[in-house]
Image (cartoon, rainbow, N blue to C red; front, top):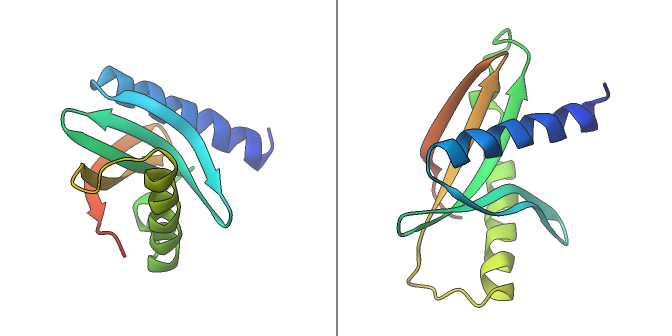
Length: 116
């Protein structure tokens, strides 16, 4: 299995995990000009932009450390585009989460970072 296929499989696993936790999946792999958001979901009053990261082990710190500031900026850029495209009111409660997957372990970090 190549990296792209593995990434798609892990993103689907993360989407299933979130659905089981009560999230409504609105979009997977939202893309705009220079950025992408893995999953966009709704939970209670929140619109949630979710980055999925997978590592087969924690040898180099694990997946939780794989969303550096530059990646966060790109996710925020894509989120602004999504908000504009879908005419979402700016007073909508939103947050940025990370689903970190290391081997078979899944960790959901809510409010993992703030918008840039």
